[in-house]
Image (cartoon, rainbow, N blue to C red):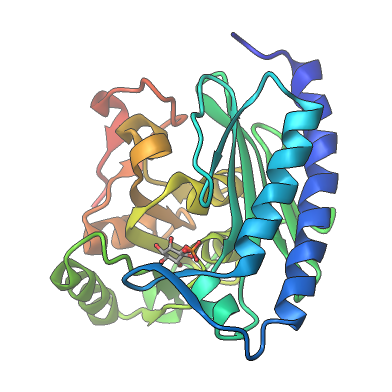
Length: 281
Ligand code: LIP
């Protein structure tokens, strides 16, 4: 089913409110996190009580407002179908669990084979990012753009780490970026890492494997803020995850070369073939 503009307008207004209420709930949990036991879902995979509480809040409100929409959440899963909300209730859970104030809520809405809406809230700093396909990107209502830095010796990239890919591949990518002259950081919250590319705080973000709930909203933000990205949906990333790359257009090729993640030419359609991929490096 194809969604028309009016249907997306209604979801946009809803999402603006939803991400703020979810952010408030996360912030409340964070203020009580100190001293709480830290739960683990698997190796280096954290879970706090707040992850579950925030996802239940988001899922409940979506089901009530748009019962026809699918849902895919980090904590409770789900079947996305042709139009769905893709939700990470707390991205940066390892930080959150250890009372490090660098985490966010990430919500994307996918329909018509593309990410239509994306919102990321950083409740600690009171920053809410929002993007709509073809409608630009903003933070707290103000338009944002990727950085204009083209000189590699002035760049700062973030390279996310996932234990779903060999450590040697991660080290090789980080090493190539340092050799190229960039600074490289890792702040353990992929969605905020992407938001920081969109607002120019960093020149690029890459990770060899990310799940859709961690990155769909951020990838839309970067594209709508004038940045370049790798393919994601067309690689089956919605349900299986895929590599992620996002950068300002001047240095995207360098990040692509260092990580081996291709750059995308054109929209990231679910059914798009590899012929639309462009290797610039
Ligand atoms: C994590 C990210 C982290 C990334 C991991 C993981 P979680 O998500 O934020 O930065 O490197 O691949 O996806 O578990 O905190 O929601």
